[in-house]
Length: 336
Ligand code: NAD
Ligand code: UDP
Ligand code: UDP
Image (cartoon, rainbow, N blue to C red):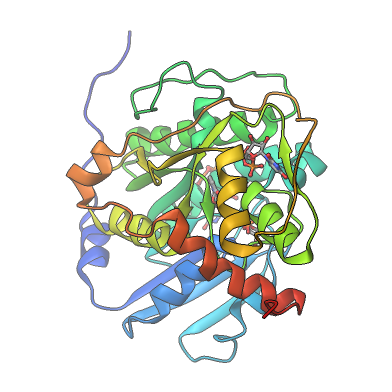
């Protein structure tokens, strides 16, 4: 017998917390790529106090150097797989390596981060009455048999492959979120993020946009993995942060796709990088890795209708913004 009773009403304490002026906001994984841009945006509001929790596996203090020492900012070295006892009003839960190289490096740890880490943050949300947002991923759709992917699609995921620690880890994280919501009345938000790019990406994390830009700047051939006709849809990081904040502050639990529907093959992406960054650079094809999804494009109807959100930055405008940051970090200026 399955209970159909509705989730409990938020407690008066939780409601009061939502309407109070000052917000204490926890960002797990805040020293990473998307997290640090989110922190920049949250810190612009003088009513926010921001606490970052990060174990620095793929993130770095450097991404937050502009805030270290600020009275409304706090940085804690902590692993989310361990319990965390602090007082917060909102939790943006991003902690998890996002690049295949890093999440495959220690797959068991990736699963622990997704499962135990999310469980702990939900326990924290339950104890404090905070609202919690999970950054899930388009990878929950696996190698999708539906195109483009909308949120009703259940996915086509290999449970025992080399990507499963990440894909299945995020799927369990979503399940935990909904079970805490139904069972304990926790206020949840789930964003399904599609490929995101921008300044502060790890230069050598193996993701396609960071690889191609670094290669173009270093005058090395762009490595298109075979067949090269596989597609991805790339969202600029400022659009992503805007979408996440609208989801957190709105009334819908999600899951909601946040991504840019502009779809490109990897060969097209290489051609764009070549044209914009280094017209002399060569394009070569190399072997691919197992279980690489063949196509990916978000259906963002729900984000448009429920959040009034859609991406503004086109790929050809975003790539040069990233080039500037990469040139600075690589110490290679543009040839005259
Ligand atoms: P990132 O690797 O730059 O950031 C992740 C951060 O989490 C890092 O600072 C890392 O040190 C930290 N971290 C990892 N494990 C931790 C642990 N156990 N305890 C504490 N901190 C830990 O990645 P990102 O691109 O900024 O991704 C942020 C989130 O968005 C992730 O949850 C990722 O799954 C999700 N996401 C990103 C993309 C994308 O294209 N970048 C796509 C889909 C989903
Ligand atoms: N937890 C945490 N911070 C808190 C409250 C809980 O890290 O402020 C952790 C706690 O250690 C537990 C998990 O979150 O492992 C789930 O907590 P919950 O209260 O839901 O479950 P229980 O402790 O009853 O197993
Ligand atoms: N890719 C590529 N060259 C590279 C790195 C990646 O052609 O140097 C391809 C990869 O095969 C995949 C796509 O780019 O089809 C996106 O890969 P990435 O690791 O950036 O993200 P994800 O697979 O997680 O979407």
